[in-house]
Length: 155
Image (cartoon, rainbow, N blue to C red; front, side):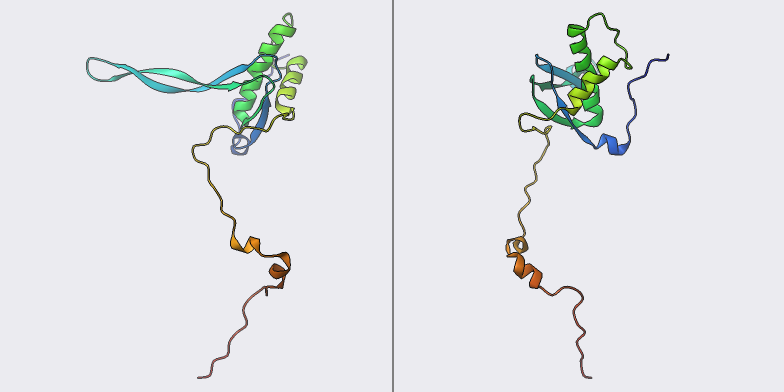
């Protein structure tokens, strides 16, 4: 039987879907995804020497955070493997393994015990309430709806 592979491609909707990721392990978990380039020196001709450093995400044990679906599934696979190494060392690490799938479902399907901390956003937008929302419901319902009446003008 062929081994089921980890997903490589996601639809745009899946990439934009936010998923809860819960660290169900008894230890903290650090997942890395992607990398940043940092200039660590320069060559004789002035060109930069770049070093790639992984972008790390730290999740304390028991914490739930929200991540885009591809990132959450990537981390869930690594956390599931870490848990399996401790609890089921003799079990083969295949993507089709029922134990591994069950662990991943727990990681991605758990309900948050603490308030969920969203992943960092560059700028938070503050939305001011509109003046109309402060009016009582009766006044809002009393407003005339629809198109204004035609006004006759004499020529």
